[in-house]
Length: 173
Image (tube, rainbow, N blue to C red; front, side, top):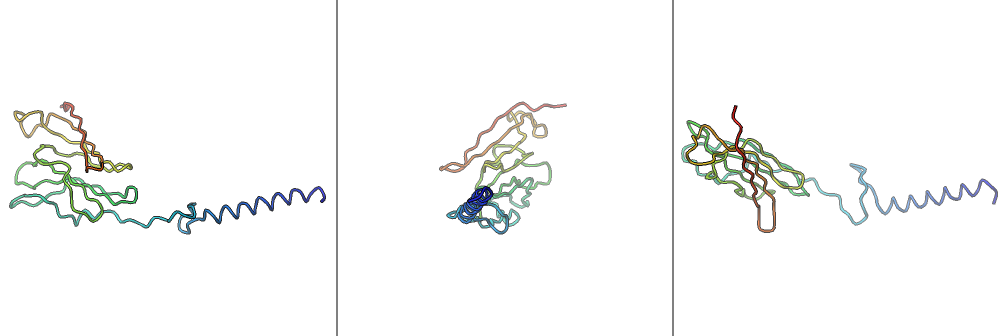
C-alpha cells in the first residue's frame, strides 16, 4: 500500500457506513425527515371542523353565537375548543366552553351558570386549553360591570378534563 491509498480506504469505509446507517434510518420523501426503520410516518390528521359541531345548548327561541374558537392537531389527535352563548336581544349572556376531540361529540368544559364571558381561548402545544374571562365576585355586582379577571386552564387526564382557575380583581380605568 502506498501513502495515498490509506486515505482512500478510510473514505470508502466511511461512505459504506453512511450508506448502511442511511438505509436503516431512511428518509421520508415529502419532508426529508429522518425516521427509524420501525417508525411509520404519521398520516395527516385533519383539524376539527368547528363549523359543523352541534352544541348541546338550550337557547329557546334565540340562536347560538360562537364567540371564540380554536383547533389544532396535538400528538396526532384533532382537538377543537369553542366558547358560545345564546344570542339574546339585549346584553351578552355568559359563555359555555366545549371541547371536541376528532369526530366526537362536544364535551362541556365550562357551564353558563359559572357566569364568565371568555375573552381569550387557545389550545397549547401540550394539549391543554387556556382561556381568559371576565366575571363577577358576587351576585350584587351589576352584570354590565365585571369585576373579576379569570385565567382558566383545562388539562386532560384519565378521568376527563380538569379545570383550574385563578381569579384576580379586574382593573378598571
